[in-house]
Image (cartoon, rainbow, N blue to C red; front, top):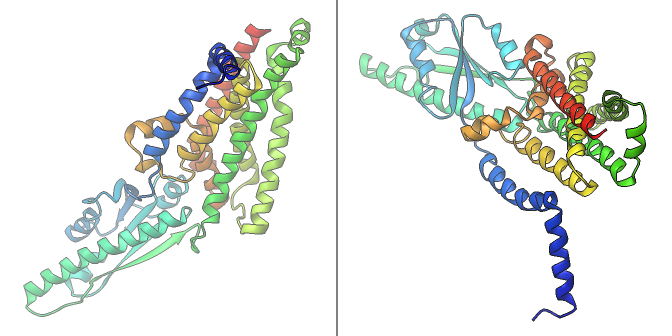
Length: 376
């Protein structure tokens, strides 16, 4: 039985929780949200790897070899290329992860009973996924090669080349397949998203709790000026933190920036502007720093960790979850970050990522300004 002295405290606490409905909603929603996200997003399988095929032979034998990769759940043909030089831009922007380059003498060598060489290019930014993809390519190439050898033996009556297709895998960007080179850029986005949103989410709420919001209301300051004043310090601090992280990554993990530093900090600035705008938006909705902190964690930590491609491949998630990932800004930032840091690509390969980050920043800062105008 509950003590008569404890019962009033319990009743009082429930009444207080019921008055703060935002906190109650967050406490009830977070467990269900975590269950759904972890249940659907946590998938370490490597499937539907984006594939490009550059068939320079254009024969029946080369088409059969290319199509053998499409009859499984492991590869998803995204591009048929006529020039192998197109692979650089596609792989730099993470539009493909594996590319097959079939030489022009492929069928001629097979018909002549000689070994035909096929080049396999693999995006090594994600070390574990790259190693798995190389294994898939090897297994499927050997399987198709065995079928060709069996047909040749049946046709000629004598054994031919045991494995007539010699595939040559080449890993780009991360030939040593070091996991740190994949994780460090993701950690930069993860850390910046959480710290930027939480720091600004507490700023306006702190003004409310300390009673200084009234002083801002009677002052001649405009909402846009307030937003700039709130975000500029955090942007400068976050950019300094980015520089420190890149320096530490180079010294400890040998992760060097291969692309343009100007482009890197420009994309980071867009990402931070959107994150800070999201934090300010949360601060206009929350009534207390506790609620602001919980809301900031809910909209940053789980989506950035699970739905951005930081750890788990987006293409392996169910289609409804994949649709949700399109509104996660960290998804686009990580593609740009890995492209600049690991692959050294330029704006031409990442312009669509930059455009989304710009739109997200404009949206969050615009909505935050509108809501602050109502408060003030």
